[in-house]
Image: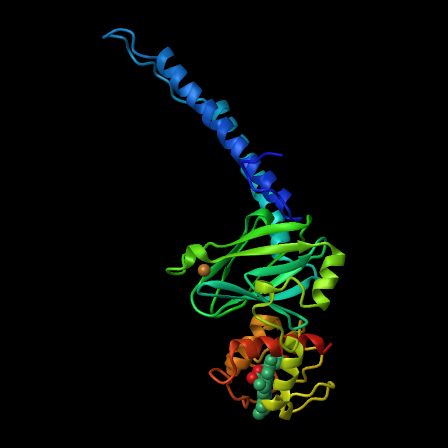
Length: 315
Ligand code: HEC
Ligand SMILES: [Cu+2]
């Protein structure tokens, strides 16, 4: 429609745009209204002679009620509408395609479930929800695609996530929006939204060569995780078939509600599993002894991410 805002190319864009427009129009309306009366009454009720006396006004309940109730209602509308949209932004659909994103000074790296990697170029499919699981190798970065109206900080310690469904094929910009050092302004990337047919071809082949596959292809992350599971000795304590061992089984672990010794319940998501591997005693599962060795400094972030992808396949 207009060119003063970026094109909108995701399912989340219209909500963000409508709320922004609503708040802007409302603010401009009241700014003009109040400024008008401010100036108009300053002139109308100015002191017209040296000995004119100021009117004695003690209050007006009707006006006070009006200018309290109307703005309150408007603010509640902004809150409710914003909250509904925010909830949607924070809750990716369960069937979303997952891509691991690694931010580092000063590039974006993408890893797909089939082991494909790309640098600064992300490939997604039109109409298919995408969930990004993001981490940083160094400082705080922030992932921003203006045309999708999504933005999320990317942290060195925890995974952060972001989701969208691209609605138009084309190429869109990725910016880093957290000042991250000398190369920050060059930390740019592209999202390539492909038609389902083109996406299927991309998934199969090393097509779109050059930069796109600069990261190369590796074993799929879930398979790397499976290898680590036996190479790093997790299998001594964690079964895959549901049998209880020294530690809880990995069968159905991802997404499970886990009861901890202190009585609280956590959902076994990416961040919980990462913490359980690096600092096992931070959140102790009820009914088990604190015998798991800490893998901080032994397993890299990349290996932990691969193990998480492996756990997701153990339903
Ligand atoms: C010596 C036995 C042992 C080894 C080896 C071991 N773990 Fe554990 N693990 C445990 C025990 C016991 C618990 C439960 C107590 C706790 O929360 O620390 C646990 C808990 C976990 C949890 C949380 C599970 C849940 O149900 O919430 C994860 C994830 C995990 N381990 C991953 C791993 C990975 C990955 C490896 C290999 C790199 C590994 N463990 C190696 C004993 C072990
Ligand atoms: Cu950055």
